[in-house]
Length: 432
Image (tube, rainbow, N blue to C red):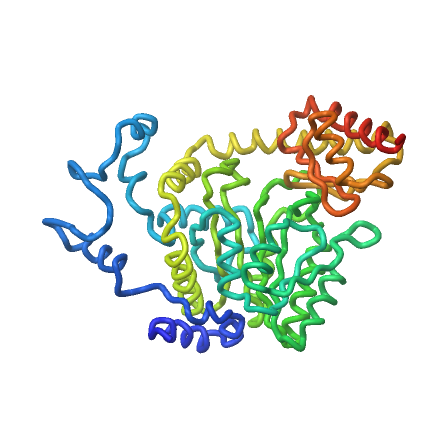
């Protein structure tokens, strides 16, 4: 094993041996090179005052070489903020400002020990880093039965984790914290579990309330006290889009510092929070009491980044940074929030109006981009196909009877027509 990896592992062992035990084989072996092109280039940037012939970019007239046909469309930005490689961990100022934003929006983080956010190529990349660092073949990866399908690819197919689902909802349509608890405690013989918490939930648009949040935290703590090492990932892709009574913070703040056997990891980003899906700017942030542990986890994360994408896109980081620094940012974001909230409330009022009879129920939703219909008689895939080919309406079929509707991309004025058509399509199928 590389001496740098061995040193990081020793730092983890001395800081918190339980966290070292959570690492996958790859997680134990990975490191960020201290003596390589990047480190030598960084050293040259500080001391090579005459000529710097290190980093693999082209320069011209004292700045990065670029084409006018590109720069002309980006004239508001300096070439040095667009064309050179961004650091593997991301632009330092962006990381700092995102950390400040996390604390501002999650007061429970005040006084907690957690690292500096590391920039990822959006959230899927952040989840992939978690999988690489902490999932070996057969490790239990726990998340609800209503989930984002990419978890299966990321944790199951790529890393051969053992996917363990539990029902998302109880019979009274609350978060099934007891199901989470039982599933976690069932991993006692393995001694390790990776738990994914995704609120607002994709596909249902559900975020638990305060009491449910306490139960979730208690279940994870009980598992840790039972001797299970728990990696807890808060997938906060849709963070901030809370429209009704629900948690308004990530559970990451409650989990940070909770128990030595719990490693909270926050995966979030500008992707959906700031409506910049194609920019691919996300973050991964570790929480641990020991500073050496946080430093070691950051170095291992940078090793994964270096070995896969090398570094994230510089222009999109610059764009997001400038937006976060703008005095108009909060006002404009609130305007979009109200648009999204109006759409969610309109959907709920339509579904509660009684005009659609009893052909479907719907799962609780109070946040995010989506909601899910629970079809009573017709098959979801059959309805999806019928809507698409007969009415030109696109929806997502999940399982036998769940149909996901993204109200995020339908104007409020068009929502009633949308659900009228869905209802008519159900009637079509029932009359066959």
